[in-house]
Amino acid sequence: MTGGIELQTDMVLRNLSAILESAGSSMEDVVKTTVYLTDMTDFSKFNECYARFFTGNKPARATVEASRLPRDVRVEIDAVAVAGS
Image (cartoon, rainbow, N blue to C red; front, side):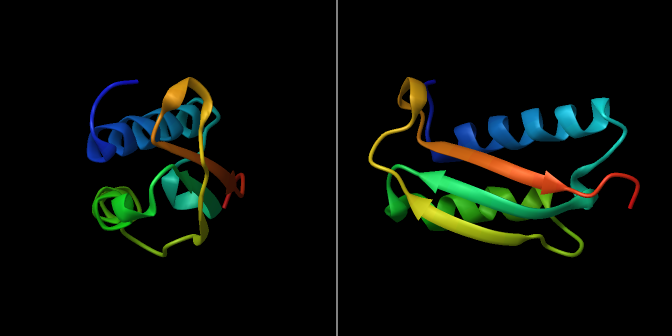
């Protein structure tokens, strides 16, 4: 994937939102995320974008640096959401 951390974060979170919506859920139902960044110096730019998607109660979050992610992306996020909350 090309683009800077902001573009990649936006795309990942839009995809996550679409998956949740297709399951009858939303970003508001996310209770925990794990974020993988290939470069922790991207954290502040990542965090600005992340905050636009989680505006209410923020989910618990762990952020770790990974030396390499599939397809050489700069960010990967997994999420746990509570259905029907």
